[in-house]
Image (cartoon, rainbow, N blue to C red):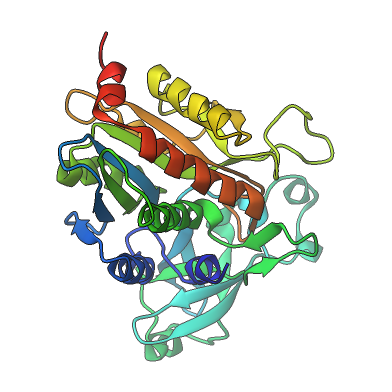
Length: 352
């Protein structure tokens, strides 16, 4: 878990993914893979099994939900805006890192004290636009002297930890360092076996702010099959339906989200592989939210696409949880899928 710890504790706001890209490139170079990139920062490792086989793209995304400094008040507080989707209710009193150009400052998200709120204010979610970040400065001049500027990214703080059950991982940015980890894990697995295709394992940029890297990355790969590796919503809390996705019950295969109906032939092929390899899986049906696959499948004439990942609790907040076992099984499933994706199988997906 050393690699996942490094990936989650590094910071990668949308548009500021450099630290994560550096880790990915290091691991790809150690695997002696050919590295390909687009012009906005997405990065992939090319692994040739059969150079005449289909091109298969496995993609996580480098970025995580974060914030940006939007204003510095006269008395030294920072106003901020979201980078990605946040629920205002999860923000108050959380610690953050403000990433200035030469130094990182710790701050806390604050608001008007609850003791002086009017009754009508107490009964609603306090809006983000009225929050601020306190980094201990006393004036805008002091903030400027410290090097903090409008446009600087602001990152959640949460150390990586494996909980006492030995399986539950707690960390920030599991959405979507899970996808980055899976890309590197599958790449490592493929060093030990043959595969009938050319596979590209990597990650895009700026998924959380509009699937932007997903629009450019296919242009450098021109995939014939694309699999987005991401997290899904665990619904295994005290009041949730027991038939929904839960931690520890296997990888998630997405049947529906707001950005895509997955390619049925590819979906069924992955399920067949899971059954053949005796890997348990769960079905994810989600009416809200989407992934890079929502953009991948629309590239040129269309690309058969699917989402495979793991269930996660509390995403789009400062902290999230996944199952280590789910992660290992997702890696095994994706590796098995790549080993079977030959020209005949991929041709069958577009044979209408």
